[in-house]
Image 1 (cartoon, rainbow, N blue to C red):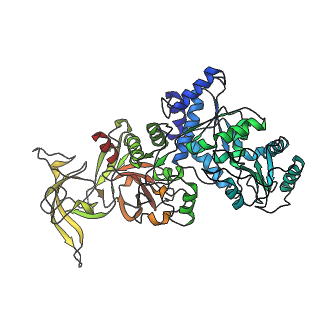
Image 2: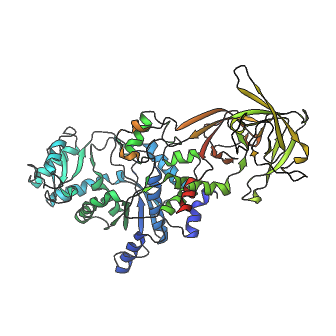
Image 3: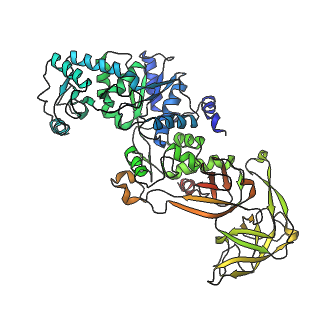
Length: 569
């Protein structure tokens, strides 16, 4: 399936992240009760531009998008850019690139920073209502005064400042008169609330930093829990869909919406976030991996970012299928990474051309094959889709096979090549090994074989059968390439539970093979092209490839342990 048509495919098939989503039930209830009109459903995907999108964001993105489309509503993209220290235009641009790669377009594009003036007015309004105050406590003192889960907090000594004093102090904060950390604006709610988020949360702080869009206009910035509901209200979002960690923030979300008196009154609905084995989703930890050089960047194929998955060879269709399979739930759980691999295998099995590539080459010389002869075999591009046609594959006297496909002294039930044994070369001939040639150190450097001219195409007139079939590449026509093999970045299934992730980095997460030999049909491959290397797995042409310097990334091997495990249950 063409990646650019995924958006159309989603809409035309009515695909959903879960056909029985509880989210739809709650929206239906809102429509039936008259709280919202069935023709006015609006959702939004609100990333903060402080990193690249990862596969957990993809799940949220699809939930937001598909929910809006199910009800023929609107879907907005909005940047929650309220923290200038961590945000920049690189992140913002890549977010849009990744969303479009997923085949999704937004109806409206918005920025929290466009509402900074309105948010400031809302803060002033809360002060005038007696619902906000400027507090001089330090961050440590605020934490101390907040109390614990079993003990109520203490009121700040600045909680009962007059409206006039609070307005004056807020204006002076805005003017840059005070240093960072010296004052904050807090909502006045309930210091004895059992919900810690309601104990006079900070809603504005001093940050003397340039904003990537607003420049130096502001030196105070709203906190996420204050800004987010205001943004939703201004944009008339009907349903604010978010992950489960925001469930405890919902009372504060509703408090802000109900007290700033602006726009609509959205409903927040939470769903379980995606947790994937051998993967971290924390942006803080992903940034650590990048900054400390454990990976080559945000788009490193070992990263769970959409950019990394794209570079590794995952397709939007496989990611959508994965999200569909895990569904939408109200309880957090851990998903096996093998399921994601299973989804991309299923997609690539029907779409990826088959080619032959030898990753660890061993030369084979067919002694009885004419030295000057070259044959070209017509080979199916993809047997799953005969309509894709055939490709021309050359065959000559000298070939390459995998080192692992030969053993001088093999164990029982070894069906590949060894002295005296006959095997089939895929789509070509039967060959029999006569002897191996070794260098001075005893390493095997080439094999000598004979072939059966009557076995062309892989069968013989006498009907004899062989148990081993090998892939191969013509030495005369082979092109050189670098191949990168990837494994899990972490050595434990749940790296999110480990604070110091540097202790669980897998030293074998990347293996680089420099001397690979590929069939010549790959000579003009373009970055992002996907293939099945016969017997080896699925691979993708890396963006760093250039003429004369081809690089391929292994997306996933052919073995599907997840599927086999599911069949046992």
